[in-house]
Image (cartoon, rainbow, N blue to C red; front, side):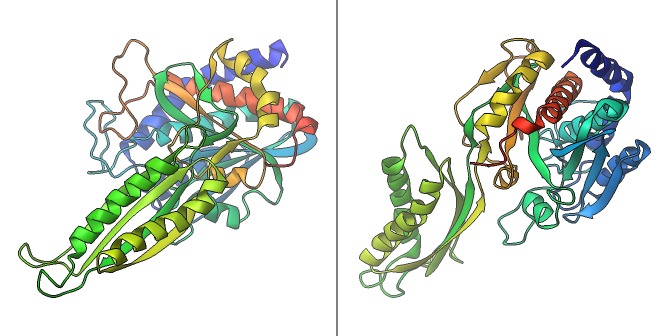
Length: 405
């Protein structure tokens, strides 16, 4: 990027810094759960329309898409920013504390939405030198394992990657690490997250003849833990989370049925395919061997987030331009999940963590903590990184490999 454009990006960010902090604080003060982000979307759409962008609302129910076209012809790329909050009661002592009981932006999506808006503001001021265009995707909450399309899946179904088609998608997530650093991995970066549910059936009758469904379920859960320990590999890790269990009606009555549900996370498609069969075999072997039975269901849900290696190589210099040298840190793939991976199944994608912790504050407060309070300087840093990435990608668009994997 030439020095004038880089200086213009800095100047535009500084012009809008105070306004964007106000936007972020309004969104933070008025958090909305997944599928209910209407007020947030209305705020963003009004400001995007004022910039002259082509805005479409109601995409994926409460999402919106805004298209910025440069003065020169070229390809279209996209930036995705999510907007939803978490069902958590905020405990942080800040003047812009959540006004909605039991709901807060504990994952930093208020910053994501503000960074998306701020990037649109900066690039709008530079559109005369843009070759191609940028599609800003403001996404509602991700899928909730209910079987109903939502988040990225529904937005893709409703055409956010089409009309006009995009050749690459970028995204970020704030991360409670040092402010001003970015973190990512080439290739697999974040894990898949697939849902499973099990119903264990015991055999009613006297203790010596029957089988207790609670005991069978307990044995099954231990068996799954053993299975995952055996199958997991340092180069292809697995994660089992069992978050829900329901059993019985009375303390002194043997339960005939027990249900438990959870998610499985992995970084590879090969593991995604083999794990369900191994889980079902283990559960049925245990329950049937002890006189009961079980049914097993498994739904593939959120795919892994995959950073397209060629796109990353093309963009490395952009991180150095925006953050300074040695501020882009390559880390091991993480076992957290994000439905940004759905975009990467369609077009080359790049997703990174952006440090949001003031280095003077120790220890770090994790995401989804009721005390989570990222440094607001992250907003300007995020806008700068995204502006460099998007403009440089448009300038080098012929070098973007159209194959996703």
